[in-house]
Image 1 (cartoon, rainbow, N blue to C red):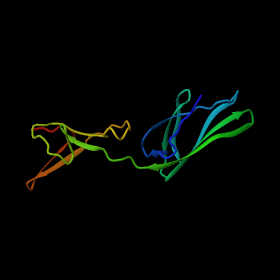
Image 2: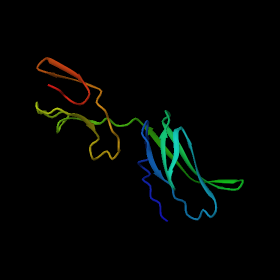
Image 3: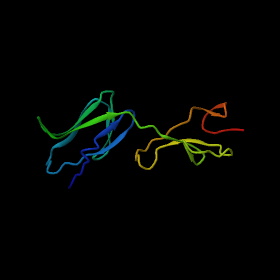
Image 4: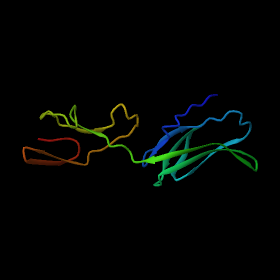
Length: 145
């Protein structure tokens, strides 16, 4: 088995459920356990796959432990930076924020662009727009007449 990690990109986002995969070679009959400091959530979803959500501190530390009877040893320890999720991009129809929208478009969406590979969904709660000193406002992501 081989494991690869990006040591420069060890970031967890507050409020986001990050998936992590854990693999340990030559563990024998030892049970694999995880311990995390500054984690609000850590649970197993499949063999060797976990969900982790960090707490409010600036750093979280994950330890992969091998438990063999009364003996526990640390197989791996990783420090993560904890950050706020990046802001999504707002779209009015197919027009990205900062671009000219189409008046007939009726849908507002908030999405991450392809360069941010996080699977997050957003809900538009309310909106307002100002054009030529006139303001319109509404609720939800569906613009009505």
